[in-house]
Length: 579
Ligand SMILES: Cc1cc2nc3c(=O)[nH]c(=O)nc-3n(C[C@H](O)[C@H](O)[C@H](O)COP(=O)(O)OP(=O)(O)OC[C@H]3O[C@@H](n4cnc5c(N)ncnc54)[C@H](O)[C@@H]3O)c2cc1C
Image 1: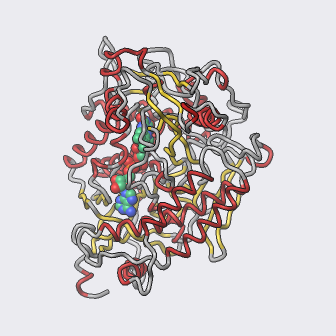
Image 2: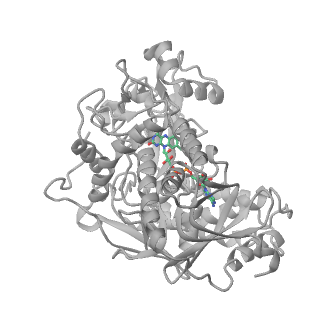
Image 3: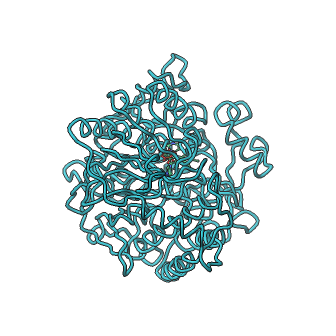
């Protein structure tokens, strides 16, 4: 190690990568346990995507209607199209209430019922009003409250630090390497335990509700470390993205009673989910919309349908859905009190991710062997709670609950573990990669163009509807783009605030894991949850009731389906999913 680099070596018990709900909740738990913890985050903590969550956080509190843990569990299992691991779902529903009350004690300003209890609203796929909310800024208030608590508990924040490689040897995690965006330069964080909580991977798609930072960085770094990803083919498309922008209009809009209308002015959900109508689960509603559009019943023959809130009236819209109203006005110049809002499906949530067991420990094979000292939580992880399709409001709860549990688990581990030794040159991989991008050799490729091509093709061929022909074409495109990426050169050769470099690194990550999404989607010849193959439109439990594990090798993606789904056959055997 060169002398100037030694100044940038930090030794700390716990490192948390990501300052969204999962990362912050874990950091708070570690700090409450008296553990020194550093949070590394690419964006300022309160700008994490969790802050954009609008609708609510699920827990069976039964504050406004009858509810039970059993029912929350069943809804989640059915929503997952029976791919969710039922032991994980059971733990989740049990812990969810504790997580919400803990937030309440921290001072989160939840919306209240008349008699002062936490208010709850209906959400798609949940059979009781279960979403605890704060108007339509739920994620914002949770994230800000957690950040305050972390500061109060003296969590060390390294804001605008982009993690660029993981230090893992012999299935033991030893730390991470990060680029200091503000000043430039690499830092090594030597830690006993590392949590990966970098959020979702929606930015692989052109039309997405996800923040710019949601580029799945740690997933790509996991592949690079020779470890697998799980169930990557399962990407949720949310039915109400603002037309052409993909920006999310919360499902709360339908929870509060909004209608979906096609070009003829019909509430078309009557054809697809007679009972649940607009509140059927997202995968089903998105497919219904796309079918209406594909069959020429979009509005004015175009590729959108409408969300109609007019009948709710000004008062309810402004009280319960102020952000939805504002987004439609700002981006489409539509006043939702007066007119229906144009919408289309948008890539929204990543069910797949870094495989972990019920204790949030990262595993590296179908038998469940763990990488010592490595943990994951939140949208980056795949535990698998959401299976093939996540229910709305279950993911804030997922991030907060499993963030909390991960923090506790890491604290126990740290108390009995020493620091593992570092490899000889832990910074080499990161230095080579950044050096290559900055010097660029004779490269002429632009990363922004490569990203644009990738995103457009992913939305087109790996979107709401998929088929073998489109996916094969897409796979070839991804591989060509990977080749072109080798010749990317960036314009900015300075070190401080080099956003050109930051984005170039992100495009590399997108290309890396997108190949796994496409391979997974191609190989899974069935339709389940959010993954719909027009050439295999039925669910096939006999062959495919299993998780996908995928590794990157020199010869491409290696996949297997050896990881079984945990099912309580006596309680929740697989059934056909009808709403
Ligand atoms: C618009 C929108 C609305 C939503 N509404 C709801 C809702 O109402 N209810 C619900 O349950 N769910 C909702 N979701 C989903 C939910 O918000 C997310 O699943 C959840 O917040 C994810 O939290 P997280 O902590 O895993 O990740 P995020 O909040 O996305 O945070 C990721 C963190 O990782 C950091 N990071 C990423 N890469 C790096 C790197 N290389 N180095 C360092 N740091 C890095 C980022 O800086 C960030 O701090 C919504 C999602 C969207 C997009």
